[in-house]
Image (cartoon, rainbow, N blue to C red; front, side):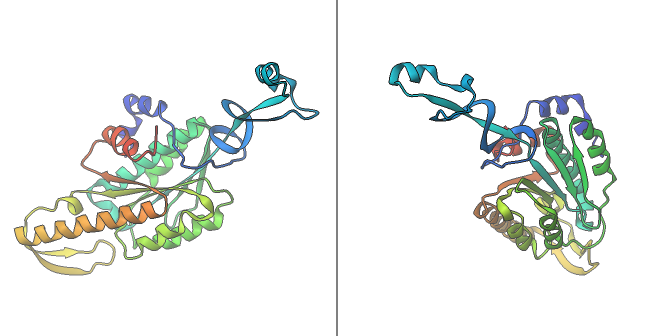
Length: 286
């Protein structure tokens, strides 16, 4: 399932990327992200007056010479980040390779996190949560994502509640889903709780983005089995595309209101173009 992701070209691209955060998120271990604390990275943050017991190597001697003030230099600490990957495995994700693209993008972001010493969790409906850490965890992460299968009726709010129930730190939450269920907005509203960074990866394919003219057909809901008779002719498709555009705007606006990054993941686009295009334009990676 993750053949393109495993290619040396794509992995080489990922090696040069880093997850971007809109706020400083403190972790527990030393990692590759700035935190609210001061530490020993190379990024200067501020001055403060010298106090007994401070490391004399941090004294700013230039300021001492010019202003006769004994100050020490403070630097940003770099903390690890807990990255929670939520992969929608409802039956609607089995069409147009949507689950594959969701797993590819989740795997790509997980790879970037693990190589930066962050911790990664994978959450999927009906599946126990899986944890991975360190670069050595990459093969296990990929194998776990490849084991996921699409089936059943989705319940994103339930998954969101489960994720929040397990969360102890803010971290970053990445939702990979087609959002094709009535309560998609309820799930989004829950996920930024406790100050978590949120990324919404909206995975859609040809069936949703560019359905063909097929005349009179019965459309079958892949999750409920409900049938709807429609005429897929030019006028109907024109009306559909108008409603689709309005819905996409609604989803993106909902994400923006929550301070979340929004990425439309089109399965017709190559994974590499998605990584270098969609994720970078949405400022998910740098």
